[in-house]
Amino acid sequence: MLMTKNEQAYLDLIRYVYQHGTQKGDRTGTGTRSVFGAQMRFDLNDGFPLLTTKKIHTKSVIYELLWFLKGDTHVKYLQDNGVRIWNEWATAEQTARFGRQAGDLGAVYGHQWRNFGATTDENGHFNDDGVDQIHQVIEQIKDNPNSRRLIVTGWNPKEADQVALPPCHTLFQFFVADGKLSCQLYQRSADLFLGVPFNIASYALLTHMVAQVCGLSVGEFVWTGGDCHLYSNHFEQVETQLNREPFTLPTLQLNPNIDNIFDFTFDDIDIINYQSHPTIKAEVAV
Image (tube, rainbow, N blue to C red):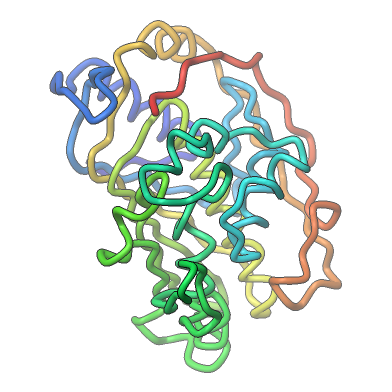
């Protein structure tokens, strides 16, 4: 299933899954309607792909990405900045499943991106001896933009059961052509109503940031999903969203003086002219 046209691509996908998906059970016991394998393409020159048919909490998108780039895996940074999207997985009950204290999410995205394959000390804390995949891929883009190995993986089979939630967006790859940087994400598990809108915005933002520090323009963000599902308790919300007309997409402005991706702060990122329909509340499946 190949889809285009920015926000309409997303609306077409949730409509297709809602109308044609297979009813399935799932880990959370909620139940889903799912399809296997879908793709959306977003031309980043046509606007920043932040959904307008419902309000997206941009503060959460930005701070979560900065949290990943810091290599942080504790929710304190997010909570200190008013971001609650990981709270359900950070409770003492959840983290005790893999032997960590409340708030410590284990080897989630930040760890895998910045310290992949690190060893642990006698207390189970990670040493700083893993692979910094973000630094590595940026240097590769600068030195060898034609490489077909511009890949960052969030999936480490050895640690997939030692985390609050095994990485859903598991691998992304960059591609350089005609002075433009594109990015494709593979997402093994896609909560289409709640999670995917955040993922689209987050990886579009990441693509802009990497392009800037590598001296490139932006091309496309390509989203590829594995198990693409709508939870059964989100169907009413999906109907509401599908009855709304999209607004014009906003634009993204980054501080042009930043040339190191790890130097970006919240104040260096500005989403301009974001007009949206109201928030649609829905319960997260944990």
